[in-house]
Image (cartoon, rainbow, N blue to C red; front, top):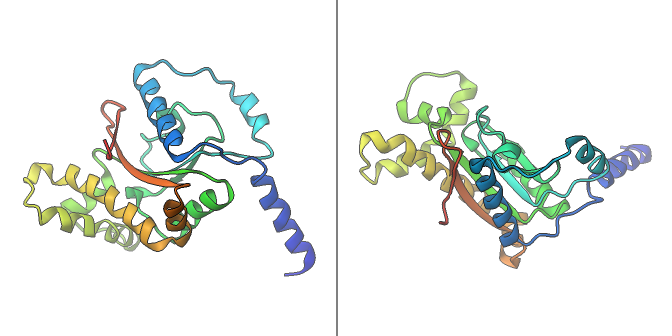
Length: 216
């Protein structure tokens, strides 16, 4: 690449790192919990979205990374009653972690100082159901499902009742994907060891809107 290209890349990245998060990991988690409580109660915080658009036009300061499913019933900013620019959201079916997701997580942690990573599954997840229920799928869906299979295998070893297999696998998949992040990202694991980042899991109930944080 020539100097002009490098300069353009520098300007692009500079525009993203002007504002950085200053919340501690514990403070970030409390913000998420408080936001979900407001969502459930219907007592939403006052927002002016166009003002937020102007405020974030030249920088973002997301305090948390939300890795969640592509399911249309999980709009992160809504279920956490959060403003524009506060959550760095990564969505893939089954909330699985691939190289693109991992790179996105590392970007938020390293360049935006996001201090909490939440792996968020949800009840009645279709991607997990594809694994638990079996069946024949396209090559792309099959490749995605393979990332969930180890969670299903772990649950089967526990002799879980058949009617509980899906929801147990959903929760186990959250734990599995968190392990993927910890084991595959030196950036994240280093920040965790330093105490500047924490990671955790949760399961969103699509029937009630409530998030069960798995450390609770």
